Image (tube, rainbow, N blue to C red; front, side):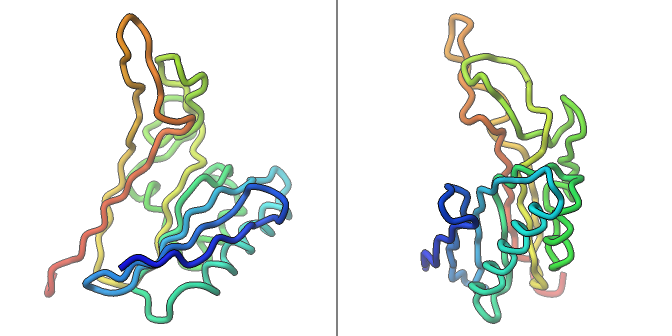
Amino acid sequence: TTTIGAIEPIFPGTYRMILHVRYQTPIGVIDLFNAHLAGHDEYEAGVEEMEKVMAFVDGTSAPGAIAQILAGDFNTEEDETQLDVIRDAGFRDLGHEAGLTCFELGDPGCTSSTNPLGEAGARAERRIDFIWVRTQAPLTFKSQMVFSVPANLGDGHALWASDHVGVMTEITRLAPGS
């Protein structure tokens, strides 16, 4: 069963928001949050944004949920200290755990930007898209990049699926006794 929980503007009057969906799975409830954030160069503004995100996550998660997954475009690079708000709340960066890091062009976890969309070639040189999880359940996670090359349209033409390279995570329940 899937329940659309809420859509919350992080900064009213902007299109930066967080979406909450609740999944009832055979092993329990998973709360999924997808965020599109502004990101901030100023530390205080970045911390304020992350604190609003965590207040929404904590305020809307189901009691007893087996996992909270927070994913999306954070417009903040992986070494920015405002992400410590999420880490300090007990969330793990699944991309980082899978070795998907980005500190320069060509690194395996770079997600932004692929503009111009109609041109071939690797251009992503920042990692601003994340999948975070907070769980105590016996789950495993396998993360990988998707849409990491443009579609070949023939005659030397290409088209990227998005201005970001995608990140996907597969969630598996550990067998009892594992």
